Length: 607
Ligand code: AGP
Figure 1 (spheres, protein in one colour):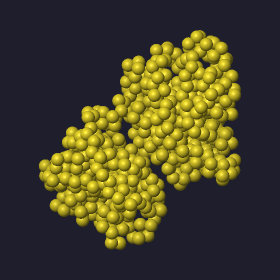
Figure 2 (tube, helix red, strand yellow):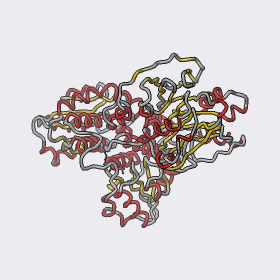
Figure 3 (spheres, protein in one colour):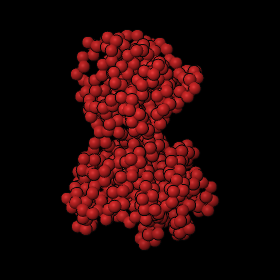
Figure 4 (cartoon, helix red, strand yellow):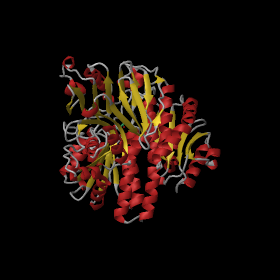
């Protein structure tokens, strides 16, 4: 998730506006930044690795005279944070500049085509193909506007993109597909940005661009078209009443709720990870002696799910070890034939870094799954997969958990292919189910959020909860318990349901809340037995179950339904969402700030 801004004005002092707008977008990404500003009819680009202040703070904006410009603050997805990978990117001549947020899935084939045409692309990014594609089409006779449109038609994937061109500096053009673009309509200026935060101090008159639309922006005019067929779209100006803080959260009261709602977007982008990254990573796992997944906290729950998927889908035995326990459990059995898969959204967790360091000293291969390009974990890894959740501001992991599970799902399907444990049609069928999970989460949030709020209001004062599941749902239950614990300070234990009769059931008395994760999978009938055990002790049964599951619903005091069918191995992706919402609304009901829970840090860099 990056931040982009574009300004076109009747005045010629927009450099300051572009830079200050960019600063307000830094929460969306901050590993590199840059601007492209019109100066005396030319396009001047200033960009580098580092924050906006670091890269642009030295510009004396009073000495600039541009009336149009764009800017970008980056959260790296392809290519490490560096000057050459920073946006804006330009074509061969420097006459076209582009800032982009999203993922161009087919950038490798586009890049190959452009290089065969003689274009020189210098970065590692997917974005850089866009200005060169526009240049190529413009050289073939298209106007810049038509070249922009056609270039985007050839791009697969997601974009929120803005372009300025030296041949038409009276206007800038932006477009969106999945990645947000909002237009600000000022008196003498027009803006486009990733979100309203950027230009809210200048105007609260906004147009939310929709998927498949592009806009041609002049200082006093906005023309919106559909990219597909160039039909003009009537303007839809809204007046925003948010303050700047609310704008950063897109109107949500907390980043955590915004990030829960962002999960379909983060998931779609992660499921676009190229197989050029998945395949070699899976091959390293497949060729290894022992495979150990290691992580902390929520990432440990993702690792447990990964272990389950590797075992069930690819019939590959592996272990999952909490990273702070790694040195004490089995390190001495590790050799140079083994691999350790480290899962860490921040890539900075000291326990997990320590585990990889110790494994590396024993000669093991180090693979990592992280959400931060260039983080410490990537520098000690032989292979890295970067999830595409964008920065996660809330301390409690939500979207980064979902994308970790999605990445492990992709790896498990690739391992199944390598090991022949599933045939082509079975893999394709499971892949289709996986690709449908963003839509499923959208449906869960849309139809079940109100129920999660009601259940939170009913049970928020309870001092203790059990979260129970079987098979893969045990890890989902553990994650639900962690979410509730860490932001509402309510005691909660995630436990294997079959194990609860060996101890935890002694906690249960009339009205004690027990949350069951109950997808219709192979463990279903045994889970029903566990629910009966708890009901016999008059526990309050709260279930997360399949849609219209009358059997579970009849046994439950409250329930949340998950629509659609999904293979058990992927069920944590939609089934965790109600637990995230329940934890969030419980915390809010108890009067706490879910974004900043006491005693916790977003990244635990101490052992
Ligand atoms: C998750 O909600 C917590 N904030 C915490 O447990 C976190 O998952 C853990 O510290 C691991 O962080 P990492 O993924 O950045 O390594």
